[in-house]
Image 1 (cartoon, rainbow, N blue to C red):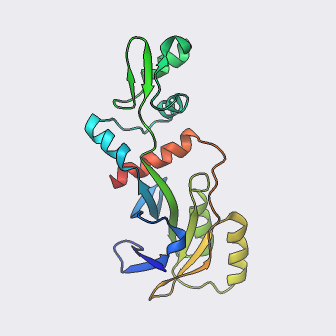
Image 2 (cartoon, rainbow, N blue to C red; image 1 turned 180 degrees about the horizontal axis):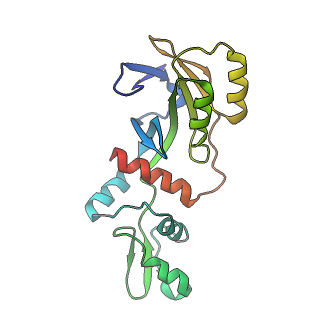
Image 3 (spheres, one colour; image 1 turned 90 degrees about the vertical axis):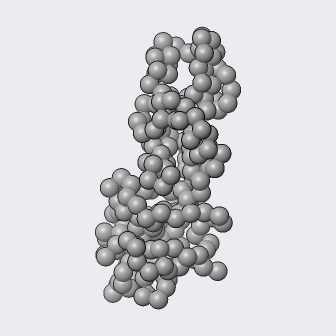
Length: 204
């Protein structure tokens, strides 16, 4: 089974193997962290609607994201349980990220989408490895080569070492010659959340 995507810059609609992405996902060709890629993602419809209804501000700075990660979701937390530094950090939160009254703070914001895969178009495999490698802490990755490399075995060995999939645009379709390694986050980080927020601003 295959799934259709517009692979690069308004080019022809082509397909990638459906096992690489989750059902019901969306795709977007955009730039994040200075790298253009096709991102396969699933929007959290409830969080997206909550943000729109509340006029939530952008979460595009690390300090507010670190603050939010220290708070439970949807549970009022007594302000008295926080130290002075933590209470001061609450003031850096943008509108809609948390509810606060004189005694408690309640985190509302969660990640607005889940990234399943980033496919980086590249004219050469070394360029593809470098660019796809930038997304290593955040999601599953693959490079899309415009032609079959002369030393394909060498390319596959290098890509396999880094867990990066290899796709080749054959002209008529996209051929998967190496499946990307499954993404298993070790922990939730502000940097990973920032990556999601950057993509969200480009696809919302």
